[in-house]
Length: 250
Image (cartoon, rainbow, N blue to C red; front, side, top):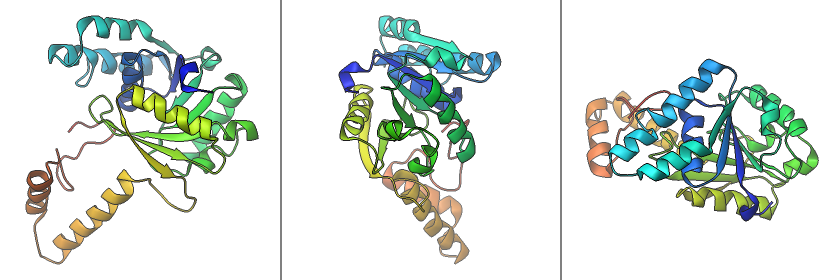
């Protein structure tokens, strides 16, 4: 499916991460349906998207999003607990918890419900994409990529697009175009079995291990390492202090 054919995007799994993904795509003009496991989960996502710290209301107040743009985006957002409501989606972006078996089960169900031409993408932060796609059809594997966003999604402009040997060039190009339409800076990464993480998290993990070695060897304190990285690299946070992550804030 070509990028111009992507009109309706399903986001499976809400919360801070899935809600942020839904938010940036609705702002970009896509119709978005968020699917989650309960009405309570949906209400939490709806709050995060509209009224949360990184939500559209705050963006309007800060002058980063026009009032009319926010209203249009809110109108493009829908919520459901029924997987069948995703059947006509042109693209699915999965954002459920980082559990391989759960992700495999989610995609196996989606594969039988969502139209055959739809693209599938996982927002996993590090699980091998080919393993996640293991239980979908051979045709769907050609339409499967990773799209890893950084939290909080409305603020962080990174998107890693992870391609497998089965991913068609059209699928890869469409994923890149959709990400760029949401004003993300795209970095390409080859899916590699036997590894954990893509670009961002693998490099950060290696840097954190070196930072911990500096502490263990008595060369520098945690506080001074964080201070050096925050002031020297302009990071919002570093290794040891309040670093954020899913469900956390910078």
